[in-house]
Image (cartoon, rainbow, N blue to C red):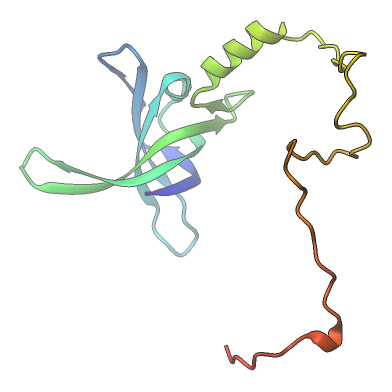
Length: 169
């Protein structure tokens, strides 16, 4: 499996699929441009959750940018021939139609953050209690775990201490 980020021109209207669990799912088909000298790469697109809902808002011929896992999907066609097709399971989708990219898992994370932090309201910084010393005071942003020594660096090698290994590459 590989990870791919590419611009994709939709060749068909995205289709919604009803899953047993009720999770939104959508599929689409499109072509990614590889360059001027090479043919376009046909890609099947699969999306879940809020990314699927975002995909369904697009039409045939529109260009979207997708990122996700790329794999070879094998299936039997109507003539009972085995067909291999490149398929991308989309983690992130962006387009000119959207103001914010859709990402897989954003709806759950966003809901939790809004609930915990009071979305849009600045949060006061918390300081350590007055009776406890701040263990990270004067650390200049570098923190180390308690009871663990910080890694130590040795003295830098001088120019005359370098040994050439004479390996030809």
